[in-house]
Image (cartoon, rainbow, N blue to C red; front, side):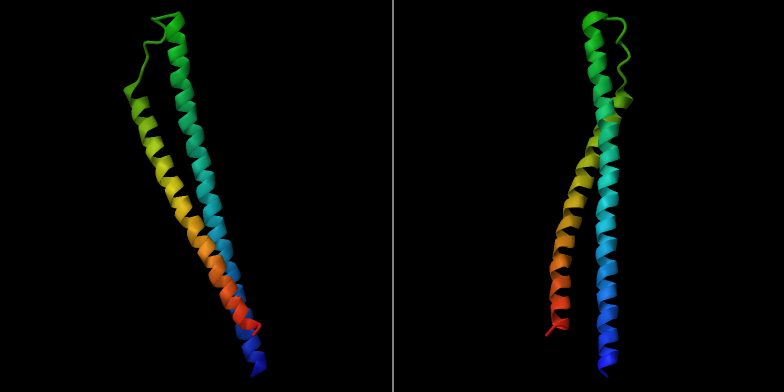
Length: 110
């Protein structure tokens, strides 16, 4: 019977480990997406700043302001904020899972 219990404990530990890895990977994936969104956002911001810079030197050269670009910037800003909040929630859940995992694993050694 001890062998069966040890096997069950091993399986539970494996499941905990797999869930832990899955949660950590999800956080990393979201952080990578966030990083890419921020790159896009800052590229648009830099383009707008460059246009403003050009306006100082040549009023005609920078008359290409695009409202679509402003809408894209706003949308990216919203998506970045939402993703940052989502990542925070995932990190909190992950920390909670770490505590849960330690509690469960602690039962194996009693």
